[in-house]
Length: 140
Image (cartoon, rainbow, N blue to C red; front, top):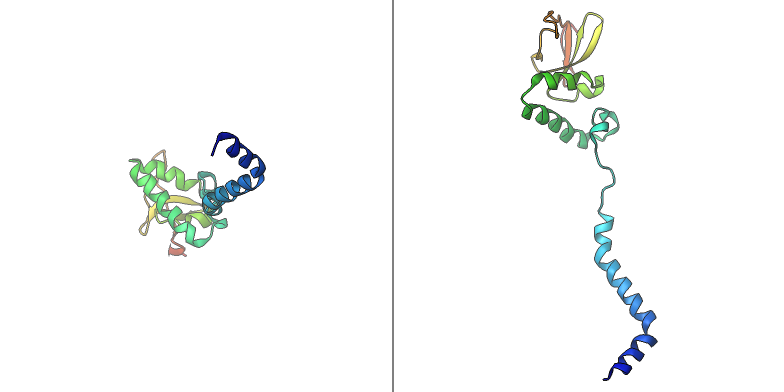
């Protein structure tokens, strides 16, 4: 075969060649495109866990606690828990929803209650009751 015969063959069959190449590319890349998950969880929606399905919240809860366990500051964890909503707080293993007088908020803590018994000025925090993992302890 000489060059003119190859050139003539490509020129007369260009549509078919292009179609075969496109089908081949789709065959290779289609499975990868269809498995991309567009529902990426971000730090912004982590605190609003009420919109996240239950099976996804377990890993969020664990990662929230692990993040603050690996950071050597329980104060940072307490500040992060303070920002959570009541519903989110009751689903996180390292936070408790506490009631002190008329004030209710989320504190760093666990089964035995809030971690800190005093505020930033050293004033004692009297917790009347607290919720840990949706169960009430104290004067419920």
